[in-house]
Length: 120
Image 1: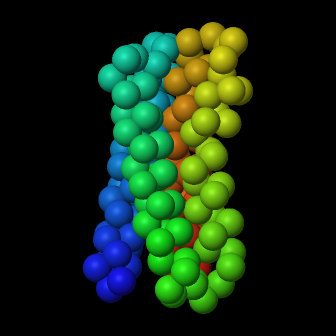
Image 2 (image 1 turned 60 degrees about the vertical axis):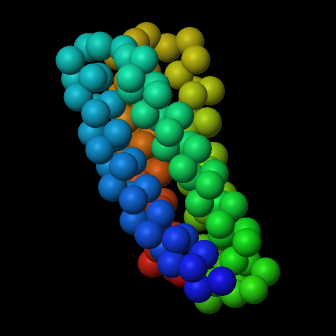
């Protein structure tokens, strides 16, 4: 289980960095007045898949080594739901607004990941 714990921790750091870059990318697209590009949407999908994989590792750890604070689990669930909820918000918005919303949602998700790390 130590390997899974190490992988869970390293993946958390990678997710924070990745979401930060994707969030800034979305803000730049929005400031340019451009809608989400296919590459940007792909980056969001990668972030969501990584978040779900992180959650699966967390569930595997939950049985053998529960977190010191139960709030850690709440941050994990919120992180997994942040980007899909943003997608429902921007469904019928203009392109610029969609990019900005996705960028802010990715930065918000990075913040959730940071809070999850600090409550582990």
